[in-house]
Length: 186
Length: 173
Image 1 (cartoon, chains in turn green, cyan):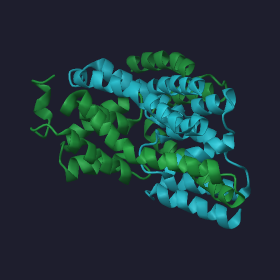
Image 2 (cartoon, one colour):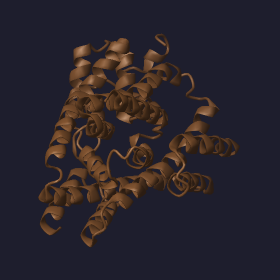
Image 3 (cartoon, each protein chain N blue to C red):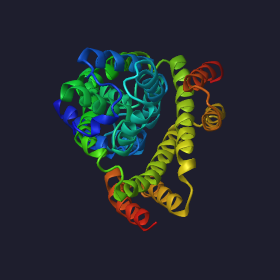
C-alpha cells in the first residue's frame, strides 16, 4: 500500500488533521445542490491535494462502492493521509456545518411546517425537488442506455421496486447476479 | 425512544451498503419503510423533508438526518446520519488500498458495467416515487415538469429551480 501506490499521489507531505477538517468544511458549507463540483475545485484546483487523474481514480472507487459518493471520498482521502483519524477529520469537516443547518431546518419544520403559507412554499419546493431528481436521473440514465442489456436491467430494476414493491435488498439479490452474468458475456 | 433509535440505526445502516451509485438510489426503499411500514410520516411530509435536504448545503445523505430528527429529535438525526455513512465509509477505506491493484482486472470492469444500469433503474424509480408523492394541482405538476426539463436540458444551478418552486408555490397556490 505504501510503496507503489503512492507514486500517483500528487502531494508528498501528508496533510494534517486540521487541514483535512478545514478543507472539507469549506466544501461542505459551500456545496449547495451537490458537493462534488465544490469538493473537486477545492482539492484539484485551489489546494492541489490531488491531480485531476488521481481525483478521478479515487472518486471512481467511491462511485463504484455503495454510499454517499462525496462522503465516501472524504473517508478514503482522509484515511490515505492520516488513517482512521484522518478519515474522521475529513468526514467531520464535511458534515459539521450541513448537519447543524439541517437539524435547525428540522426544528423549524416541526414548529412552523403546518402553517398554511409555509405549506404553500414547501409544496412548491417539493414539486421542484421531485423534478430535479427526475431530471438528474434522466441525465444519469441517458448515457448508460446504450444497449438492450442496459435498458433491460434498468427497466427490470425499476419494475421490481415500483410495480412489484420488492425491497431494495431483495431487488439487488435478484438483479445484481443477472446483471453481472450479462455483463460478463459481453 | 431507544427503540426508535435502534430501528433508525438498522434501517440506515442497511441502506448505507445498498446505496449503489449514491444515496438517491435508496429513496424508494426509504419511502417504503418510513411512510409505508413505520408510518412515521406521510408521503407528502417525506417529499417536503427530501426537498429541504436538497436545499441545504452538503451531501444528499442529509435526508437521513432529517428523517432521523423528524422521528427521534437531534439524537435521531445523528444516529441516522452515522448509520448512513459509517458502513459504506469503512468499506471504502478497506477497499481503497486494493483498488489500484485491481485496475486492470476484467472483473472490476464487469462489475462496474453491471452496476451502472441498476443505478439508472433505481434513480429513475426515486424520481418516480418523488413525482408520484407530490401534490397534484396543475401548478405543482407544471413546476415538476419544468424542473425536470430544465435539469435534464440545461446546466441551471439547482438552487434557482428550488427557489423558483418556493416562489411559485407562495404566489399562486
